[in-house]
Length: 443
Image 1: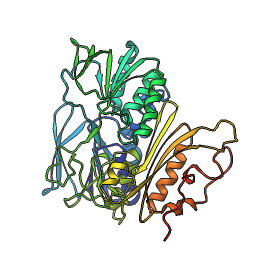
Image 2 (image 1 turned 30 degrees about the vertical axis):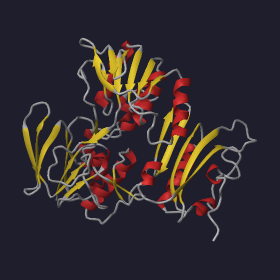
Image 3 (image 1 turned 180 degrees about the vertical axis):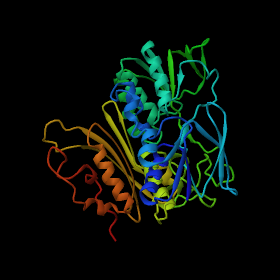
Image 4 (image 1 turned 45 degrees about the vertical axis):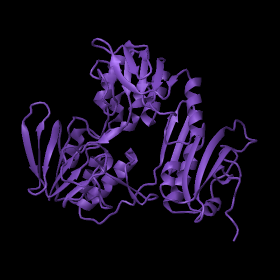
């Protein structure tokens, strides 16, 4: 069996390893546009502040290991530009020499991930304007950072906040420009306010409701221009979201953003072609529909499922509930399930419980407050979503709630969970169980 995998990172190599383990007769060719395999993209921002010493630390396995140890035909600088699904072949060219190539396949996996999206901004080609989705992009940024004192970050989402923190911890002045009215647009405004206050307290210059329209400078960026003003800076990092790398894949069913629609087996709309990771759709168990929430955990899981099915098994990816967490200076920001906006689209009556609770027992030294917002479906009492902002203990509560969501638990069942308790870790009633209104309406 000839297997071609496009993309040598999380989803692609998770799939490749499952095929290696479970189908010894398979011949695997991996076509990677760059020259780096299997690295932790989520760790890139922490190279800036030195928590990760260098980008090489993020590489789990290099290309030579896949070739020599696992007998995978792992190619580098091979950019795929077309797929002929009738003849079952992929074609493209070498990035450096431009020499064309073709590979036929029995099974094909598209695992091309996503690319950072650069808005259409004036003078975006000036030196000193960066995006940081790959190791080469981060290396380029790190070459210039020692020569600047002021950085502007465009975008107040996950990556934008992580970059703001790590640049500031490097000792540089930071301005954060965000088009929306609050940081982390998916959060409830009351929780987002805490993040804004944290940024201000750490010396970050935060500009909200500012739409960036371009940059100024001769050869190097010297200022960033919005609809309301011009702000001097020495370096810019743009973090305004990502788009799936699927432009070359024509004839497939896709989401509006270009992500390839897949079923539970990771099969696309065309026979013998699979997709996984940030270039594919992600079934949302709560929405009961295809969604797009690109995360490294999901990419690895989808890649594993795709690999097992290509190897001859019958495995299913059971979907996501939308769980994520973020560190921002002294805060932990976690969420899982639906937000107010997405819950409203379900046409269900939703109750929201907002609380401020301690992360540990109140009498134990150094308790800290967590702001918690829980959504519950009014009639069924099923759990719908949770957002938490606090200094400690957010990860534990988010993971517990995500597990409850996955298993379609009700609010009352959540209260019955046998959770770990000791004063240094929790109050006798865990933070998740301190909702003022403990029960639904009586019959």
